[in-house]
Length: 90
Ligand SMILES: [Zn+2]
Image 1: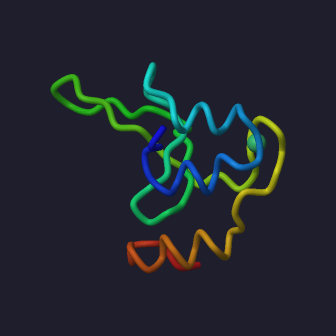
Image 2: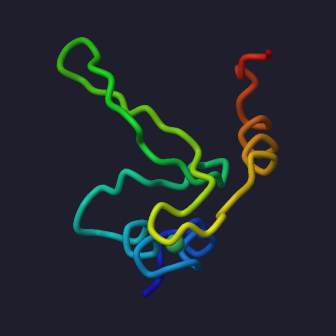
């Protein structure tokens, strides 16, 4: 078992459900660890032209299976903010 990156390690610790979803090879999970190390879940699908679809991702702060806090908004902001400067400012 080699795993598929440090992400599943980091976010699979709270429970087997999340670990299995992140490590699944049987289906494409709607949870994914981004290149920025943030755990995202797909919350919607956008129909694009030419039959393509785009997933809409949102950071996950609590494990949906067991309720453990897996990351904080500050962590997400620090990681995602460094990689993406397009975040709207309020
Ligand atoms: Zn969990």
